[in-house]
Image 1 (cartoon, rainbow, N blue to C red):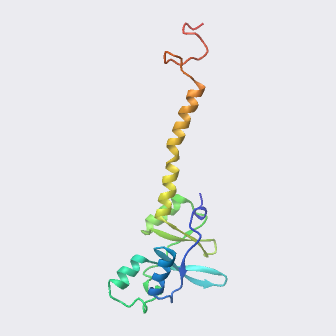
Image 2: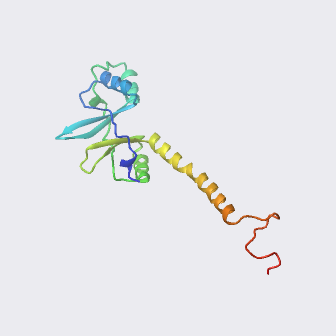
Image 3: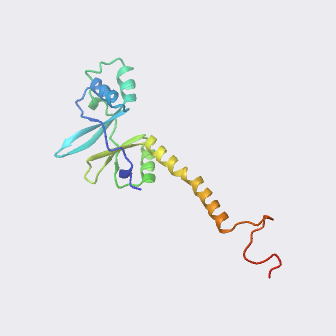
Length: 165
C-alpha cells in the first residue's frame, strides 16, 4: 500500500521565519506535536525542516531562551528526511528506522508536501491489519464446520457408512 494513501493530508506548517512562540501556539491551536517548515517554490510548498514540541522544550525553554526571538529555522538541526507518496509501508518504516526519525513529511514526485506520516500512524495501521488475522481463522473454522459437519460420534462423515459400503 502506498504511504500516500494512509498519510495525514492536513499538515500544519510554518516557515523558517516563524518564531518559536508562534510555532508553539500553532501546535496548541491544532493539537499537534510538530510543524513542517516549508519554503514556497512557485505553487508548491517544499518541506525544509520539522519542528517538534520536544525541540521547543529542549532547545529553547530548557535553555531559558526567549521563544519570541528564536525562529523555527533556527531549530533545524539536520537535513529533513522525507518519503515519497508512492513508497510502500514497509519501505517507509525502514526509511524511518535508518534515519532514526519518528515522523516524516510525505512528498509527491516533484518534492511538494502532500502529507505527514508518523510511527503512531503506522503502528495503528499495522495493529488494525493484524487484528484481522484472528477473524480469518474463526471464519475458516466456521466454513470447515459447514462443509464437514460431524456425526454424533464426533467422526466426520464423508458419504459412506462406517463399514465402507
